[in-house]
Image (cartoon, rainbow, N blue to C red):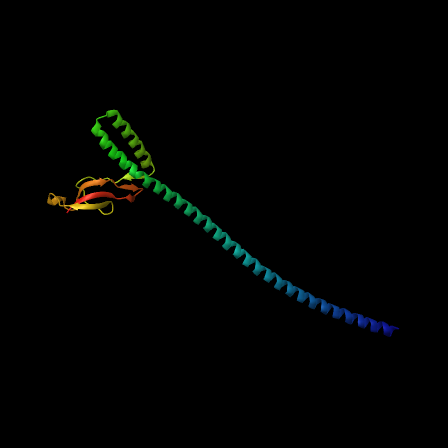
Length: 184
């Protein structure tokens, strides 16, 4: 019986050793497998994080672009409204010249006050008249020569002889050139 017991003990020890080897081998494989899985998941997390950051940056750029486009549209509409009001200023000037012929002091004063109020509002919005007078040098940045006439004197050559329509600036930008007659 001792012999059987010894055989059983040997088998048992042998089985335990095999179990331990299998167990440690499995543990090593599981450990390696878990390391690989963690490494893979970290890579996937980095990819997703990168996608998120790119998407977020793209969205921020989109918001900025839309805001700029909205501002540009508003500015263009504002500019166009002011451009459309310039002929009314011209009409006021012509109207006041004609009213001065009638000698009706109160009528002239009333129309002049309306004109001044309109000019004040437009000036607050950034519209300014280009300051020119007869005898100034012709400057293509601000003036548009609609015709040239022979200069009466030599010093009027290339100078403004007559102002037909006033020019206007909108915050340093010429939105209508002054129409002038120059001497040649």
